[in-house]
Image (cartoon, rainbow, N blue to C red; front, side, top):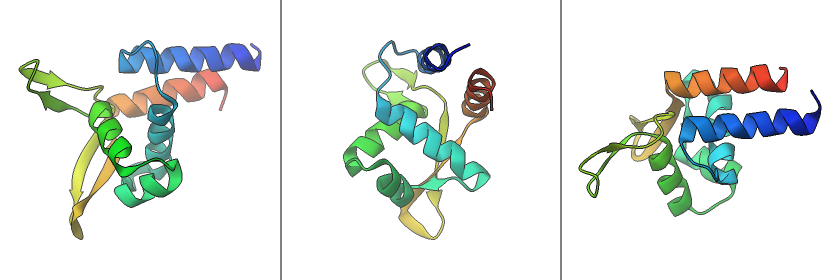
Length: 115
């Protein structure tokens, strides 16, 4: 399989796991940074430095990648790929870790990309 076909399969996986036809690059970048952090998780500051977008964009994207209560739906929503927990050292910061579903996506990506 050539590189373009591998990338298309990887994008298809992101679409499948997020339920979105058009997956923003920011979503992909955040997931990769969080995955790279492993069990220690990636803090809010690290995401800001590594992704290079505004705090508001990081917050909204992490919210969409996790699970949250959507008032308009009256139920839970989100992609269930990330777990967000308060940082015990700084109550204004959060640690972001992949959920089992998020780790499943990363394993599928590694298989597709041949790593």
